[in-house]
Image (cartoon, rainbow, N blue to C red):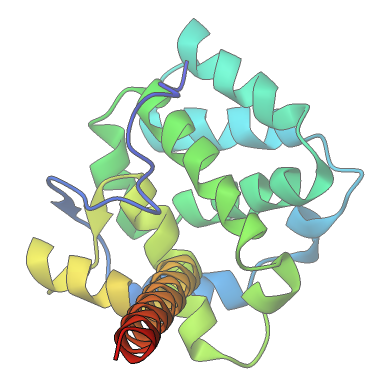
Length: 204
C-alpha cells in the first residue's frame, strides 16, 4: 500500500534517483500514446496489472494489487493518468530499472504520479508545448525515483524545479503572500508614525 505519510515526490526533493532512459525517448512515447490508453471505458486495473507484470517479470503481489485497485476505482482523470503511466513504463529502455524492483514500488510511484492531473490537466499533456511533455515525463520518473540518462541527481532536481507547474505556482503564491505581508507591515508602521505625530502635536 502507498505510504500516505511519505513525502510527495511531486512537491518534495528526492533523496536519490537511479539513472533511466533518455528523456527524449519518453517524451516521444508520451506524444505517441495510443488512443486505446485514453479511452474512459478501458479497465484501468487490467491495464496496470498487465504493465506491472510485463516490466517486473513477476505476478502482481498483494500490496501492489491494493494500489492497482485503488487506481481502478479512482476518478476518471486519475484513471486516465494511470493508463498513460502504464504505457510509459512499458518503454523497453525503462524496463531494466523497474525489473530490479518490486511491483509494489512501481505501483506506488504510478499512484503518486496520478496527482499531476490536479495541476496539469490531461488535455495539456499531449498539446504542442514541449515543456508540458517534459513535465509529465519528469513527474513520472521522479515518482519512480528515476532520473533521465545523462543527468546527475542534482541536475535532474534543478530541472524539475524549472518545469514543474505546481512548484512554480507555489513559489508565486509565496511571493504574493510575502508581498502582502510587507505591505501590511509598512501600513502598520505608517499608521503608528502618524499616531505618534498626532500625539506630539496635541501636547505642544
